[in-house]
Image 1 (spheres, protein in one colour):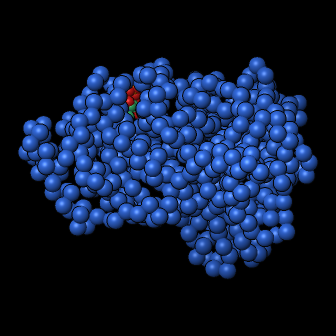
Image 2 (image 1 turned 120 degrees about the vertical axis):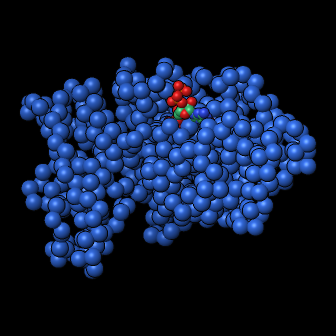
Image 3 (image 1 turned 180 degrees about the vertical axis):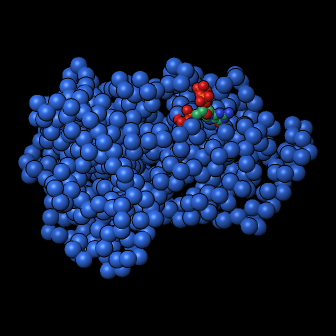
Length: 534
Ligand code: G4P
């Protein structure tokens, strides 16, 4: 009994320390730089500049694929674990690129919170909006970091308003910048009124910055600020006091308010206090909803339910030498131990979880134990599909992962008809992994591939060539959006430039030439529902 209590205490303590999150941003806002600074301030690296690689390229944990290196981007998402002060951070890598993929969306479902990085000169950009929408749907609390304050940017008050209006969320400034651009010198903590002034130690922010802690009254006297800067800070703070949104952690956890921080990831100004606030505010792993085998909905508590996890990502052929496949699992409850025998709910059989691994920075290492919030990779001999639940007790399945609305569609065929078998196998495997979705035309049963971004098609063709030795011909179709149709398809009045198909779960999907056609279809068919996420 004593042992049980101490194990429970260990589980509770380990769970409370976990912060599992993702960074959402538009490419170039500073996600890679912030990740690197997290590693710097966690003590994992001593100088920044390691994560970024060759000029124009980036080396991240997932940078293993030839194509990523060729194109200098990181395509696949995985996770890194490292300690930060008293917390254990699990950072999910959500690749940022103009053409991003469903993987990015799905990875977010494994996060308990998100950091939204916004470029102070550009404000809220397209990809940030899309990713924020997924966070909202999943009720994932979001912290906002307004980055690049050391460059000329937009006035902080404007940026606050834009966050609120573009994302339809309340924004509450937790800190406020002292100066901006070349005069960016520090931050005021609006919670306790303290001020931090920074000075660079080495160029490029390779090392921690020097911090001088002051009280507001000392700020003017410090002589470090011009009169204009002092007056502006004073003015903004007074305005915020009257017109700003209040902040409570409860509202943040509900997704109703986003706390806003100003910083410069490159120069490290404001980064440490942001990371400290993140660790304090972001939630540790909580209960997750599941469907019980008896049809009831239940909540899986991280401490009370013995080990359970679900598969949020599959990746085949990660290592070209071994041609293995990895299933990435998010631990939802209980303690995981290496070689554990667990129930695989969909297959209704037991499986042994041998050779589990995790990624710490760029190193792959074997996992002996894991706790709620942790991500583990398991060698997958074809047993796992996306969304699968595994657990010690059985009896429930975590809610299915949402399927996202594809925006590009294509016909694809092997150039050499003799390669049909290998082609079918490859496309099937990649649909299993979620690289693309497969759809069938209702009329002629022809198969189509669908994706959220063009990059997914590039990955499909690249992997068919390299892993299945099949060259392919891809014809993109003239559709740019889609929706799941609910209601009788025979009475649905489609607009012009549309096509009706079925997805792999046999649900009806309508493809549209553009958003306007979708709006027309909604107006014309009031008895039908057109849903954006399935
Ligand atoms: P991403 O992962 O979101 O795509 O962005 P990343 O961190 O790669 O940053 C994009 C560019 O913005 C990089 O410059 C980076 O150095 C710069 N940057 C990031 N944060 C800040 C900041 O706070 N201040 C300033 N001034 N610049 C910042 P680059 O020229 O594209 O790359 P590099 O040549 O510096 O490696």
